[in-house]
View 1 (cartoon, helix red, strand yellow):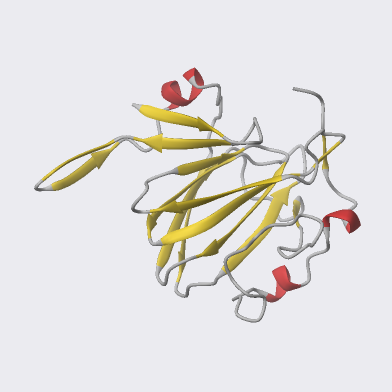
View 2 (cartoon, one colour):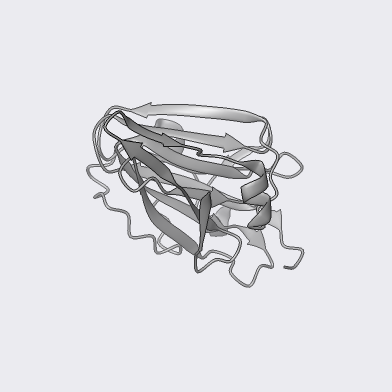
Length: 189
């Protein structure tokens, strides 16, 4: 059984799989195509990604792929915790530039559904955090783009100071949303 929680952006959902535990540990069905489809998330996943982040304050994102290679992502944390963010980057969307930020952790067992047309990024809250996410299209370097994590127009309250963030050189050079010419289009609800 999977619980679906709405966010302030109707396309972005929090997915909470049930954990059944006893003295041996727990069992959890973290993904079920029928359960997600019944909740309105009809996604066909083609790739699983697993990332280990050694230090708290590690920032990854905000990343996305252009159509027709846009990716939906189902993101979860199996060790540690992150502040996970999805930003609506669909030109013409009534929620363009708005975001949802959620804490995902091994303790709360929440996942975030980030649909195609949204940029995604996260900041680790603990050392040795591991993140897994399923994607709806394969990684395509020619379609990959990104937006600066600290773009003031987005107003994201990241839990790390800019002077303490651990960031790749590539992510350090990403443009602001207003300077990004390559975005998805909004086609209505």
